[in-house]
Length: 395
Image 1: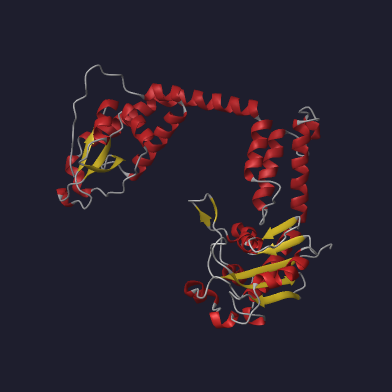
Image 2: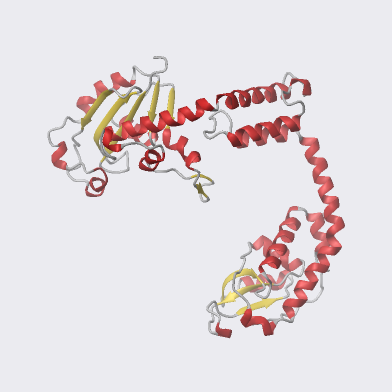
């Protein structure tokens, strides 16, 4: 049915579709007409206290309701009449219904939760993506009036809230229609350029490969709702495929600049290291805003003579709540000994007498050396044939 779709939502005894059961199923169409709404009587669970605190559906409320098996033919009839299904965290509802015999034959699905996440814009570092938000947050964001239908967490009320949010997002998409169309055109150009177009720039809307990629990035960043048919990774892949030679030349240029700066950088490291060796009297004046290093970063640092240390498990030195810092002007061999020393509590960290600016400066140098081994060789200290004597300072 053209331009027609349904919105569905469920309430359950828990979160595990394989073990928990349905308590309510609701379905409305894109105009808000209620197609199905019923409490469901579970056959295995007699109580669901934790879930009840959220959706307020009690065992008494579903005692006289039909089982899911009794109403599934009616639900399947509705599902089979629509080509598009909308939901909020649709995967959750779909899993519960499928486990009870639902037949999802639709060719298009829209999960409003995933559509809303980048609009709200709260980043999740652990996942490396935008954080999913609750339906109540999305509904409030678009000014939905809960009293107009049902309260939150009743599946029928959630259907109406989901429909409201979905229509608001689609309005945003409609207002950016020209941007979507141009981005699609640019993508088609890139595909043709890399294929039958034989890398001829006359087939590119923007004129050159570099300008084409820059325009794609610009348009993509403007879109409130990102298209399912193009991601940032896709654009990055086009960039790598279309600008390989330019990238190589840029890397060569950066490498040459790095070599030119090597002697200056070595002197800067030496100056900071000397200051660390002779700054014991400053111990009590320093803050303990340590920047912790990965093992790879620490190894690279000691190769270049950047002072690195660990925090010991001892406490009470110089009034330090973190305990005594023991620092070494290390060789790689001494670093291995240090990291395996059971008396050390945490690390590796930069020397405590470095300022915040110096720590960040040294971290940039370390990361550049890791990325460019040839540059690293220009910065590293000469290899010594005898073990380096440890030198320590405490705080």
